[in-house]
Image 1: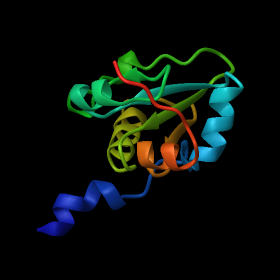
Image 2: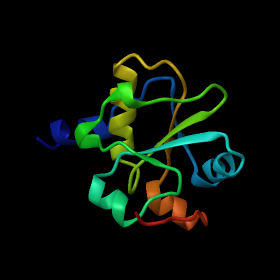
Image 3: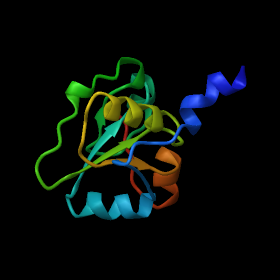
Image 4: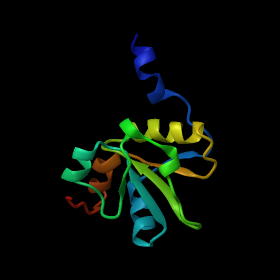
Amino acid sequence: MLDRLFASLFAPQPENVHVVDPITILGWVEAGEAVLYDVREPQEFTAEHIPGATSLPLSAFDSARISVPEGKKLVIHCRSGSRCGMAAGRLAAAGYVGEINRMQGGLFGWKAAGGATTRS
């Protein structure tokens, strides 16, 4: 039973999905090279989020809402790194062929790396 429940967490990711450490992503953000999507729920986003991130909750995830300008890196994150894996899988399954970067450790990792957060 647990295998079925947690299968999506441990399933192999498509080739265009990469887990990237928060320090690297912090550098991308500071250089203006990243577009961040936060897949936590709205109340979590309101309580604390990365400045400039777009809220796209996993519970209402719609791959058509993902927009990445030319030359920017797509970064998906959540609280700890699990939900962004599910979102990345859904995005790839929907046919997204660009690079999908998952932030390792999610918002926890971001803050541990010295990244700023804000409230709505």
